[in-house]
Amino acid sequence: MAEDLLTSIIDVLDRIRDAGVIKVKFTKKDGTERIMKCTLDFDQIPNEHKPKKVDVSQILKLAKNAKIVHVFDLEKIGWRSIPLDRVEWLDADNFRFKVKL
Image 1 (cartoon, rainbow, N blue to C red):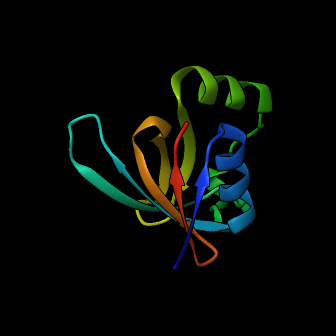
Image 2 (cartoon, helix red, strand yellow):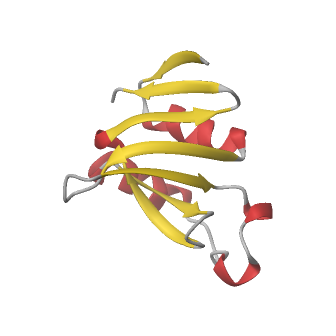
């Protein structure tokens, strides 16, 4: 699997959106590691979990200030947060991306 480096929040969001489904490995607040299969593709999110509206400015503000991106966890069937400053890698489209913000 080839590797590449993502160095901005916009790059991370673009990669998640473009890939449809990704796997991401990160360290949770409690120190445990987690691998999550997730998406931002509304076609893969059940209707009852789709947000009523999407505020791009709020998404970018949260990502920039708190270094958090909300994604839909396809295994737990719910919205979860990815702490961008604790991501080890994300796999998308047969590429592994390291995240260095």
